[in-house]
Image (cartoon, rainbow, N blue to C red):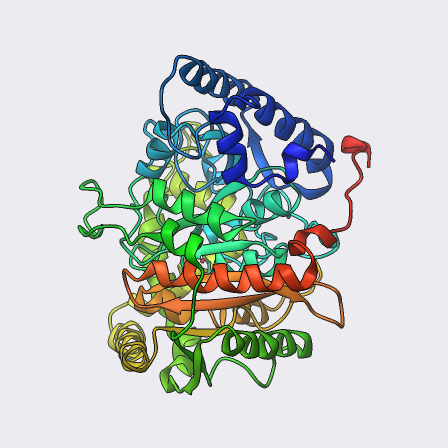
Length: 504
Ligand code: GLN
């Protein structure tokens, strides 16, 4: 494989800035790789080759002219297809938005472009980011590069699979209940869900507005931190954006010293229903944290047991309201517009044809939970549980600097295994949902392969709101120690994909 593909984003940025290579060369290498392997992975819904090369050449010219650009200038990135970008369609992997080209860029898109990051294209996801396997995409499932019969997680399976398949060194994900962290975990990559409000939501197609959060995905902790720094910070265009300085995540990723840190293991996240290899790798990592000088204690967060149930009332409620705007009039698809049908019929026909099964399931659930007579019993109760979960976190963070757990109860499951069992699918987010509900920062870092199936396992680290830097400190410490043990990064043991192109 071309060395440019396995080089970190930090090193690529440095090499481009020092003119040891060019952004055009790096971008072309990744476009070639996409050409060769994406037929097997289906990580991309749209590849913007022409535009990416143009952007790369423009960065090269600016550097040649002596301009000082940021550390990621010229480095390619894969963008989840729920984030708007005017240079390509935004479909959210739904038929209802097929071909829709947004009229504006998301704030994070704009910030990345301004930093000289080269966007390669848009990545696959579960339709409107609802799912844990990318199988709910209207454009076919994404496959896990570790084993192409397995799911790459979801909803952001495309972004994480693109990293694991070396199709991009950086990616953007969005996380509402786990969609950055769970895909990172099952693909052996790094995924960060920043504090809610820490990164602008302006220009994200909203799923559940009180939970949605965009964040960085990468193959290394430092690369994620560098991208985090580009996208984070206050945005007046997002009313929920936090007007406070961004924690120094890059410094934390470079430091990686956790001596004296107090780390809490959450008692409720583990045990029955968790795969033995996940439990084993997690237990070893907890021991490692102690050896690295942290003080590890057990903490109890009893209300986490109700997080999944409460999430599946709040998330569908907000979704049913957010997705009402796809009414056949304003965006994308329109069915039955032949002069013979009423506006209401056109709306119903369009939504019937344009939305997939899971999206419809959530809209029905949410509409029910919000309907008069049920509102207090369902939505109201779920909100009370949300408050109790936040209180559990507050109490735990009084004793600990960060909390840890496995990211997800199992390794990557087989494609098709859970499609007819929504609750089994939902359980993939058992550990990630509490931080989404409370809005604190959380991340997943690779900690090895499960002995029983040889598939990646992730460590979830959770930090208080606006203490995102602590995630990176722990991530960097674990990464350095494990890489010394393994003799290199985990992805070095990834099976080689065939590069025969679409025929493979
Ligand atoms: N899997 C969860 C769901 O289906 C989380 C999705 C997400 O974070 N976007 O709702």
